[in-house]
Length: 413
Ligand SMILES: [Zn+2]
Image (tube, rainbow, N blue to C red; front, side):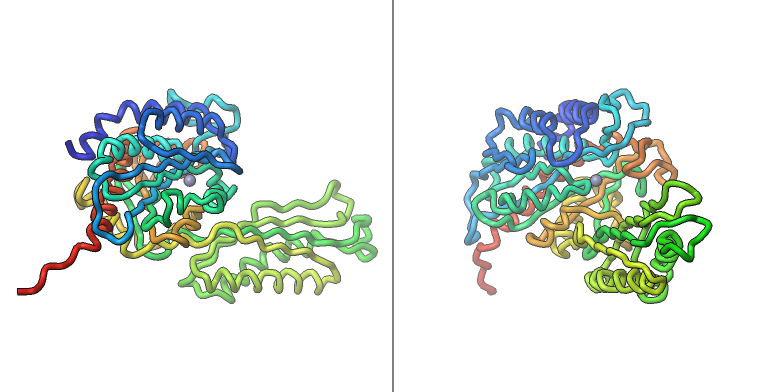
C-alpha cells in the first residue's frame, strides 16, 4: 500500500496520541509526561533510542536495511517539537488542556503525533530503506532553544555520521485553507532577538523634577525613537519589526522613580539588518539617555537565527508534496513570516527545509481564524495522517535519491 493509504490506516492511533498530548501540555525543556508518551508510541518499533541529558528530548534512529551505491550510507533527519505554551485554553474542544495555564497553542502536539505516526510507517519499510533515519523529538522550542541543546548533545550525528538532509514541519491555525502545504526557498522565518533596556535616573518628588533625573520621559522617548530609527535607517524592502512588550516604571504618581525598564522583541530578515540593529540600537538608546543626563544599560540578546531553507531540499519537499497530494495542495510563499524557529539552528548545519501545513477546520475561513499562540487557536485532526505520510515520504524519497547518487551513469551511445 502507498504511504498515504498506510497513514490513513493509522489515523485513529495518531489522533489518540495527539489528544493525549493536547490534554497534558508541558512547557520548556523538561517534558517528562510528553517524553513518556513518545516512548510509548515508539515501543516495539526497531529504533535506537537516546534520551536527552540536559532536556527530555528523544532521539530515535532507524537503520535501513537496503544496499546503497553512494560512498556513505545516507542519513535523513526529521524533526518535531513537543512543547506547549503558558496560555489558558479557551477553544472549548472536547480534548482541551487539563493543565491550568498551559496549552498546546502552537500545534506542537500535532507535530509530535505526526512524527510518531511516521515512525511506524518508516519501520514498516525498513527493509527498503537504503539509509538511516533520525527522528528528533525536541522540547523547548518556544524560547528555550531546545534545538541548540539537542545539537550540542549530538542529534545531527546520531546515526554515526552527519545527516545529509533535515526536514521540519509546522501546522498553522490560520493563513492558508485546510490541508494546504506551504514552502519557501531562502529566508522563510525571521531572526528573533531580545532587547533589554534599563534607564537609570535619580528618584525624587514629582513636583520638583529639576532636583531629580526622570527616567520616564527618557524611556518614553526611547520607545518612539526606536520606531523612527527603523523607518529612517533601514531599507523598507529588508524589513525590521520591533515591538516593545514591557514598559515598567514607578510606584506612585507623584514620585519620580529611580529607573525605567523597557523590553522588546526584534525580528529581522537578513544577516545585514540583524547586525546593523545590534550596533544601531545601543547607539540610539545611549544617545537619548545621555542627552538627558541619564545613564542606561542596554543588552541586545541574540536568540534564534534566520530560518533559511536550502533551495534543493525545498524542491525535494515540493516534489514530494505534489506526488503525494497533488499540485493544488502546495503553496509557495512569496514572502517570509515574521515568526522564528530554533529549527533554524539545524538548517544552519544541515541542508534542510521547513514546511507549513494548514490545520484550520475544513469549513472555516482561514482569514478569520485565530492564529497560533491564541487561546482560541484550533488545529484540525484531519491533517494528521497527511502530515505523518509527508514526514515518512520525505525520508524515503530523499534516502532513495542519495543512495543511488553513486550509481555509475551509463556511457553515452
Ligand atoms: Zn510553534
